[in-house]
Figure 1 (cartoon, rainbow, N blue to C red):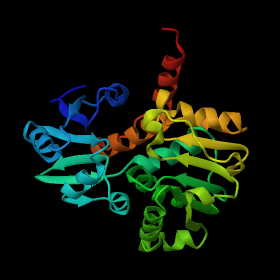
Figure 2: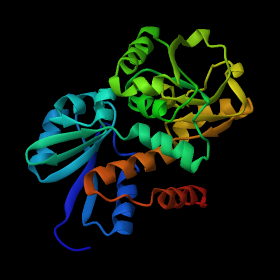
Figure 3: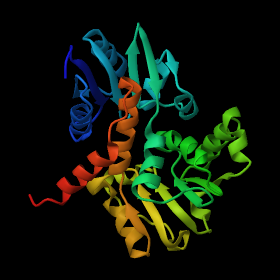
Amino acid sequence: MSGPMDHYGVLGNPVEHSKSPAIHARFAELTGQAMDYCKLLAPLDHFAQTLQQWIDNGGRGCNVTVPFKFEAFRLATVATERAQLAQAANTLKFDAGRIEADNTDGIGLVNDIQNNAGVRLAGRDLLLLGAGGAAAGVLGPLLAAGPRRLVVANRTHARAVELVARHTSHASLQQLLQKTELVAQELQGLEADFDVIVNATASSLSGAAMTLAPRLLKPGALAYDMMYGAAAQGFADWARAHGAVPRDGLGMLVEQAAESFLFWRGVRPPSAQVLQEMQQQQKAPA
């Protein structure tokens, strides 16, 4: 590495659990980028002030975690199409007085499912559980993967309807939607079986067990929780007990980080290698 060190971080509340600093440090090492990455705790009612302080202190960009992704989008000067579609941002870049916003969650999810898990989404039946910020960030890229049918289900049905309507009306998705049936359904009324279920609800934040009917799962279906580690255990146990293949969101975390890194640095890091290293570390005895 040579030249001045550029500063990045993850801004959220809480952030102490975040694996992002380790991921980006490894990305920087493997790509020869002169940068560091830290954790930035923002008080719940002072996100804008914390962000501005980070910019004033010379930060070049940051990732944004819950509960600030919607606010991050609103504070941006310009936004990528995928951030505009989600109305939420998890990646910010600061350049010439501007705040540029992106949302890398969805492409990170799709890349992990297709490239790392080896499950193709084209022509498949997908169920997306949830209609909040997490679901909003991934729905567009899931549609772009070309599933046959994509159902959004949420405890509050109106929120699922609103999310689907926003995507249905988006001009850049019109051609994609000629090949994909996109619908909102009541969570309690789900009946059909699915090839892939993605859990984007808040239930995993507490590691809660799932109460979904097992008929939703086709034999060998992929059951994907966007959380990782202990937080995803309840969903994984439910999926495994009913013949599905569980997967947590560690791969999504690494892949969305790789997209953020590309957005900031113009270099794509070897995400598959870093994911493999992290998985090996998890398996290693304490």
